[in-house]
Image (cartoon, rainbow, N blue to C red; front, side, top):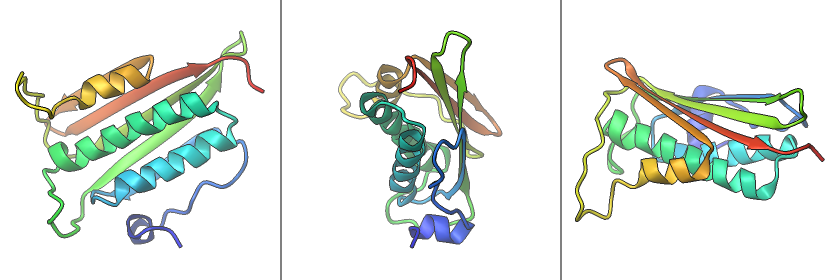
Length: 158
């Protein structure tokens, strides 16, 4: 049975082999990062993505979803579920040279909060973490929400 975030929104796990696209609509609650991790991992595995590249993308998606909840919607661990959602869309394409490219977008409609710099804080490393996990990271924060785009390539398919 899917976790509550998915049951609430009617998502089904991605199980079909070789599914080039991933679409998730998650409730903005603290169960959703684990749901996103599971679904992205299953999707990448179904597309024969390497374990190391999979781990990097899963970690980056986890951070983006968590940031949407905590910063975009300002939801704490104690808050009850609300109507807010987070969209996760993934696409795998193949270039003419055979290299495959994964592009995963994480979108919310919360309030954009620019990152703060506090040299004494142990927090605030999420963007740096996402950047370390992917080849290209784009963050588009507006008054209508935030879109994080994570891109990673992988050599010739198995």
